[in-house]
Structure formats: structure tokens, C-alpha cells
Image (cartoon, rainbow over all chains, first blue to last red; front, side, top):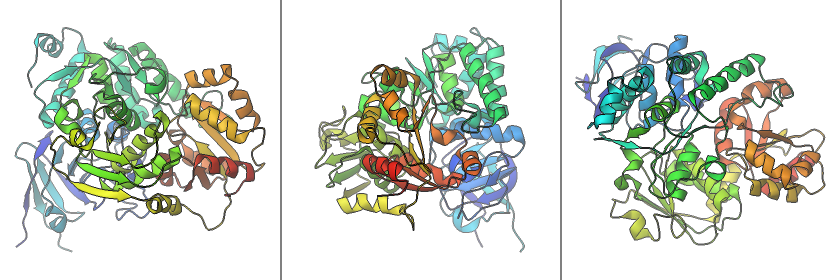
Length: 140
Length: 412
């Protein structure tokens, strides 16, 4: 039976439950997103065209720079932003941006998560327990 | 985190609501990264324009200003998204112009100098070795840490405003010596002759050593990098790899040699960059035909020296009738170019010289649709990396080749 709970090294913000959006790519709000509409807009991205609204992003790392600090706040205000963020490696911009936007963020997630969790599954993240848990297994 | 008496007073609201809330956010970030205390900063440089902030970011800023928030240390703004003198000619959105005027006004009320530059280190404030600052814009961070020996993390817009309000930032990452040591060694056999060569090197090393916490050290077998070369190297490393610091052995202050740059840190990677590797970066953007719509010199903004070189390369020639040339710099450099007789000859070529902006944040996707631009040639590896997201086909070339492309309307 596949694992259903994965550990993280660090976290902040409240525990939440939402649908996962799993990306194998490093993440950049400026390079990857239509920030006006909360859509993955990077040509060739495996999640191209998908909405990020109210989802928990799971990805291995981050790239690019400072724009992310405003992006999470801007998208939350437009009602098209992430519910939460789960990274492998993280830089300060993502953490600062998550704090300003008031969304939970976790980092240092076990890499096995990318073999198990799929986009569309409901997951529960708990930054205090440092866990990511599958709340609902996909049936199709 | 340990709080001294002043920080406790900030937390308790003795200096107002804005710094109190800022400190709360800083504590959350500091706790996340394991900081044990704050460090005072002498200067803040922040990214804050409507293109990145949107309505919610502007409301966040307005709330701070309306509550009486005021910077505690000298603070400056990064390059902006609107060039007021050219907004109509470049068909920038009137709504964006209006919103940007409000952001500019709010920042002024906060006490931020809207110098609108991403080369603050070349024109406004040059911190010394070991000086703690809180800078946004990745290129400025890379330059501060690497070339000047100052100490800063990436401080995104809200975080930099927080640092300006409290006069401090959590002590983690590149404020600490242990994170500044090189863990990647790169021997550069290629001779580097142009800012674009250094940008290409940044692309190679950034992709290979990607990750904020990695620090490459470059051993140049040939080449004598100047400030503009190092600025393009850092901007490219940040863009391709999210890197915030590098060393050039024998050239940057914390790297007289490999042993001292490394300081015993575990080596993550070691590799050689050849001339062929550099040429391969240029080859990535080689289009199927040579025609170019647009030549852009930007990202980072140009120094006076870079504009002097462009003026020399153009001479008295004019850009091709069907081509557009954009050059971005800041107001101080533009004034210096004017006074030194560099600006007028550049403008006489037909080039558009913009101040206070960086092109990639000026809504280039809208310009592409408005003007029918598709293919852009640039000497900036950072722009080469970013602009694909806005629907362009970018071509990276050395500065002299960009100039010849502008004159001929096609690649040499």
C-alpha cells in the first residue's frame, strides 16, 4: 500500500485541506503564471492551462526572483491564488510572499511525495506537525 | 528569536501599527529559517510597482502609509514599469499609468526615494564589505553579496518594506558567513570579452548549480571582468538559478583564492566551461531566418560606460527602418549621458532611451501585440531567459552584434 503521509522539514501558517496541484518543475510566479487569472501559462509546462485557485502547489523547488513576494498577495486578492505551498527547496521570496499573503507553506518535503500524490487529490497540510497527508485517494 | 528592548517596543506597537505588523511578518520568516536574532540594516532597496503589486499589493501599501508608516533607514525603489515620457508612444495601458502614479505617490509618502533603478549600486548607494542591507531585485542582491561583500538575502517587496519600517531584518542566509562560502567550483577556460559572455556563463552555472543556497566560485583563465560584466553575471545567475551570491577568484572581496572562498564547505559540484559551452548558449536562440524586430539593451539598466560603448559602436549610423531599439537606464545615468555628450548621438541613431524602467516589467506582451513584435535580439542573458514567458523569440548576441543587427534589421 502506498504511503499517505509525508514529512517536511519546515513550515508556517495554519493547517488546511485542499486539492493538490503537483508540478515536476521548479516554480516561478513570473515565469509560470498568468497572475491575473491564476492559470499556469508557461508553454510546455505539464500543468499548462490549469487553474491554481484554492489549490495546494507541490513542486520540488523554486526559481527566479523577487516578483513572487507580491504575486501571492496579488492573486489572493483577486480570488485566484494558491491555498497553500509545499516545496522541496525554497528561497526567502516564497516564504516572505506566503507570510504576506497569509497562506501556509512547507519546505523540505520528502521526494517520494512526487511518486505518490497526484494532481486532483485532496491533501491536508499541517505546518505545525510538519506533515502532508493524503485526505482522499483518486478513484479514477 | 531573541528580541532586544527596541524590538520588544516595536512588537508592542510603541512605534505604530505598521512597524508592529512588519515585525510580526519578519518574526515568522525568521523563525522559518532558524534565525536567532535580528540584524540592523543601513539601506533598503525594494521592488514595488503596479505590475507586480496589483490592486491588492497597492492596498497593502496604502494601509501602511495611511497608518502613518515611515521608513527608518534610507530606502530606494527598483526599476518601475512605466516610462511616463514614452508611455503613449509605447502604447502602455493608460490604466497601468494611472495605477503606477498612485504607487509612486504612496512610496513617496512612505519615505522611499523613487529613483527607479536596478543598478542602485552603480549610482545611488554602494554598501561596504560586511555591511548589512535589505535589497530586493535579484541582480542587486547578487552584486551586493558578491562584488561589494555586503550582506543581504533576497528581500521581496513586502519583506523589504518591512525592513524599511523596522530598520532590521532576520539574521539568516547570506547575513551569516557560513552561507557565503563557495560550494561549486567552475573553471572558465573560455575567454570572456563582452557582458553577454558573462551572462552566458551565468546561464550555464545557474542552470547547473540551481538553488538559492548554492554559491559558485569562478576561476577565470582569461578575462578581466569589470563592474558591468559582473552585473550581467550576477543577474544571469539569479535568473537562471535563483542564486544570490558568487565569487570570482582574485576579483571579488571574499575570494582571494579557492581555499578562502570555499572555507572548508562541502563541494557540491566542479566543472569546466569552454568556449564551445559559451557558444552553445548563443546557439540556443538562433532563429530559422535572420530577421529581427526589436533590439533591446536592458536587464540590468545600462551604466554610463555601457551607453558610451553603444554610442561608439553605433557611431553616426542609423538603425534599420523596420527595426526598433530600446535602451533602458536610470535617471542619474541618463543625465550623465546627456551632460557627457553620449545621449544625443544615441538618440540620433533612432534608438529609444528609456529611464527608470526595465523593459521586461513594462508589459512586453502587450507591446508584442500592439506592435507585432516577435523576435528580440539582446545582449542580456537575463532578458533572454525571461522574455520567452511573454511570447517572444529571443536571440542572445554580443553587444557589437546587437548593434550591427539593429543597423541591418537582421542578424549579421
